[in-house]
Amino acid sequence: MEKVVDIALPPREATDPALVREAAAEAASVALDQLVSAQVLKRSIDARSKRPLIRLRVHVSDHAVHDATPPLHLPDVHAAAPVIVIGCGPAGLFAALRCIENGLRPIILERGKDVRARRRDLAAINREHLVDADSNYCFGEGGAGTYSDGKLYTRSHKRGDIASVLRTLVHFGASPDILVDAHPHIGTNKLPHIITAMREAIIAAGGEVHFNRRVDHFEVENSRMRGVRTADGSSYRADAVVLATGHSARDVFERLHAQRIRIERKDFALGVRIEHPQSIIDAAMYHCQVRDPYLPPASYSLVQQVEGLGVYSFCMCPGGIIAPCATAPGEVVTNGWSPSKRNNPFANSGIVVGLSGVELGKAAAANDPLASMHYQRNVEQAAWKAGGMRQSAPAQRMDDFIQGRASRDVPECSYPPGIAPFRVDELLPTEVAIRLRAGLKEFGKKIRGYRTNEAVVVAVESRTSSPVRIPRDRETLEHVEVAGLYPCGEGAGYAGGIVSAAMDGQRVADQVAARYAVR
Image (tube, one colour):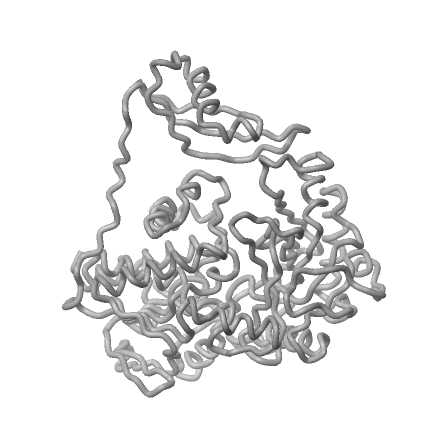
C-alpha cells in the first residue's frame, strides 16, 4: 500500500514526527501499527484563519521506501574538452557541474575573490564605506546570493528541474528541509560552506576555478568564440564560453557593446527597501499579539497596479538585514538577506515599480541598449550624494514618504553602514515616487499595521534584475550572432533568482554538450 495524503496540524504538533505519523495514518485510513513509512513531501504555512496551521503532504506506505534518486556523479574530466565559464554565481557553478556530468572540463573565471576572502571586503563596505569594484556583495565566489540570503523559491517550474537543483545543494551540505518547504531558504550563514564544497568538487573532477580574473575582452573570429582575455593579461582558449556574470556586471555589458556583440535594452524594476519591526508583520500575518514560537517569522507578498505599472514586493526577508550592494564607488544600492534562523528583529522587503520602455526612454535614446543601465546608475549615484557621499543610505519614515514630508528623524535600522534622513520621495524619479506612494497606500489596506511611521523607507533598491538582455537562440541557447557564446542566468536576462539561474546554467551546459556531441 502506498498513498499520498494531505494533513493540517497546529505548528507545535507539526514538529513532532510521532504526531505527524499518527495524523497521516488516520488520513490514509491505515492502522498506525501497519504504517512503515511516512515521508513528508511538502510543507507550507496556512495563515488564512486566526489559528495558523502547517499543511503537510505525506507519502505513507506499509513497506520500507528507498530513495531512488541517483547520487550526483562527477566523472574525471582532466583530459576533456574545455568550456570557459565566466562567473562563479549559481548559473556559473551549476553550468560547471553539469559540464562535468556531461564529460566537459569547465574553466571558471571569477572576477572576485573566494567566498571566505570576500568577507573582508564586505566588512570594509559596512564599516569603512569602501567598495571594491571586483569583490563585494554581488561579485565573488557564489555570486550575489551567497551573502544576500539564499532564498530558493522560484515560479520557473517550466524552465528546468527544480528538484535537481535542490538535491544538488543538499548533496553539498544544505539542509534536507529545502526539499519539502514551500519557500525553501538556506541562509547566508550556511551558504559559504556549501559554495566551498561545490568548488572543491569541481576541482577534484578536473575543472579549474580562477579568482581575481576579470574578463575584459572576447576573442571572436569569423563570428565564432575562440576564447577570452582577462585584465591581468591572461588568455584562455575554448570554443564554448558560458557568460554567467550576473545582473550587475556593467563593464561586461559595455565591453560587449564596444565589440559590437549584440545586446538589448531590458525593462527592469526600481524602488526602495522598506523595513518594519518583525513584530508588526508577525501580528498582521498570524493574527496574533505574539508569534507562536513554533512558527517562523512571517513574510508577505504584495502587488498592485498603479497607472499602468506594477508595484510589488521583491526579495522579502523576514528576520533579516538590509545589505549594501553597490558594485562601484559613488553609488548606493540596497538588498536584503536573512540568516538561516531568521532571528533578527526586523523584516525588510524591496518595494519596486516595474518600469517599461516608455519611462526609461525619457532618460536616453530608445535605441541605446544600455539606456536602462544608465537610468539605474544615475539613481544610484544620486542616492550616494544624498547619503553624504558615503555608503550611508537615504531614508525616510514610511508615512512621511507617502505624505510627502521630511522626517525629523529615522528609526533604528539594520543597514550596517547606517542611514541618513532624506526626502526619498524627492530623490526618486517622479514616475517611480508617484507609483510607490499609491502602492504603499494600497498595501496599508491589505496588511493591518503595514502603513506606519515605525517603518523606514531606504533608498535605493535597483538591482532586481539585469537592465540588459543578451539575445540567444531559443533552441541552441547560443548568442544569436556569435557561435559558441552562451549567455546565461540573470546577467543575460534569462533568470531571476538562485534556482532559476542554476537551472539556466544546467540547460546551457546541456546545449554545449550537445554541440560537442559528448552526451
